[in-house]
Length: 311
View (cartoon, rainbow, N blue to C red):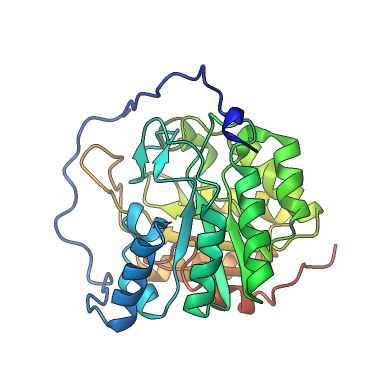
């Protein structure tokens, strides 16, 4: 894909927050304990990312686990720039008109994977709705470049590509070790949480991934106003379409302009949802206040055995 695949007639998007500014919680519950120390691996990884002009969702998404993960020499690389074409009510990633595609990025990312000695790399991206394939070919290029240089497992966290079947087929054909697409919230909350996305479209993507024989994973945030019964209904939908892995974590409000936290879910409720989800038939549920989609990704993959559940 060349720069000509840009939809040049796409206007610069405007961000429209659907809720008035709401002050963020000043004090987090006692169970939010994050290691704030910075070690040599953290500093080396930060320097490497700057040297190679690479982005991570760890930084752009204000992940609370960044220091822990970077010190363990793990990171979720974010390709296709740091400007998203969608205005999700929960997301801290920048929004606007992205730059042109940087086709040198896959080679730099693969080089970073080699330098870090990773055994499990996670790659995600902003939404690039102005591209004909939504950026699918960049995911394919990254997988190919990494596999040329490293035996590292490749987990990709993809957008919905606006339901583009050929884009999805290209990504499936590249055979990532794990395919992730986050459902994010319950159907009722989509108009405010994910206004440019569709619950059924995301569910169809996950079903297609499972049908293609790929280990399939998704994530859900809690604390946006969902009910426990609605979460159970989503888990039931995920079991029905063959999803393997689910992550459940606490939503944290990035800024006063983003959606407010409706409640902080206690650890025991996360533990109960994990038990229920696995009893329903999900291969593995990783659940807890600080859990994010890519948190302990390699360990989660191992816990799920890294293989498809028999049909």
